[in-house]
Length: 108
Length: 115
Image (cartoon, rainbow over all chains, first blue to last red):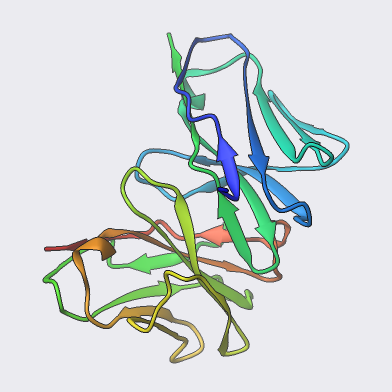
């Protein structure tokens, strides 16, 4: 079983739309969860941490459901600049385990 | 904003040759990592390094790979005898504690092409 599984997409949405996607993780002992953003052939960049209570950062909302081992990301009022691959990441001590990514394309 | 610097940005090497990928982590960081991403695939953990020794390594990090912090500022990944399947983007990262909430930062990567 893959450690971190994501819906690969792609999600093609118009500007201003809301888009949401999910990820599941296999290690119930995992403690820290994150969403990263990766642009084509660039390094992953931290978008936001994900907390059990859910958290928001501007137009981005992340949720964690530990019982179901499920993480979600919602992007409101999509901008063209949100077009990227979003990586679900689980931290187990020293290493980060990455999902394969969800591709989002925002069109004008 | 502090950066993790990787050199070179792109390296082409012949199969069987040794390569050394170089990284300069952020200066007050204590933990160092290498990850790789084969084209079209996910980012994979290779190795973590703390206090001048390997903390954890993945099954990918076999005897062909080694890491070193030779001079207190650089952190290197050596691949002893490259194979075609070593072609990938290699990312160095550093943090001042374990976990991403402690300044975990990635470099811009070295694209390794083995021909």
